[in-house]
Image 1: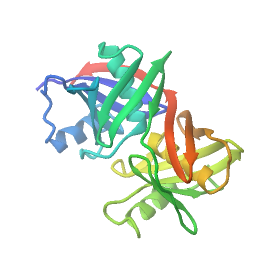
Image 2: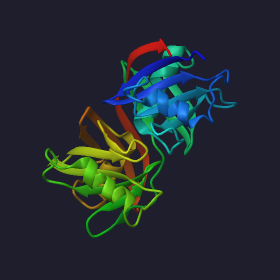
Image 3: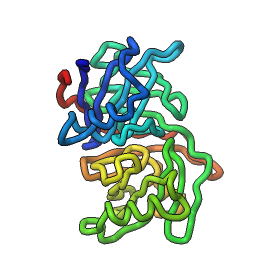
Length: 257
């Protein structure tokens, strides 16, 4: 079987993109997805995304982690899919699409994609970390030695440990740079390693830092390993609404495998 694919990346979070509007891709073949994402024997990516037709929206997003399993929302993947949809001529400069966590609005201009994320009705502040769901579950904690910290080892320990266990959580390690800027490194479940960027993680980190009082700003810059993202939101009575994730989404290459 031959499969046409496109490769996109958003601040280093990279994805295999497939136009599945004709329903030609075998969505139940987890081994195929994992093989395509394999960096040594396949194309190489943090995840694979299918663009599909939708009855009332511009398109539908179906997202798989690099382990081959369909997963929860991916913010950078959603932004890259908007760029892919523009490339295909499905949209021009704005979109409404459905993902696993519901509907998303987005705009694209000069390679910068602004994606509306889901509202966050609650944030859990624990003794040494914050937990919240931004379309995917996220554990957020401070780490001063962020440059030398063993992200994979410690992230894996937290991801599989109490209270998350097998279902797991993404794990974010954060260092404050100034009042509205934070440095972030993320261990992603499903990839089971550090990624250069995580969109839902950047969103979770910005909201967590505001919730615990580390910043009073509602437009926050998040410096990830692969570049910079911006998160903005409104907040009222502890509920975060009008949440937007903004950053670059770039075409890398295309091919047939």
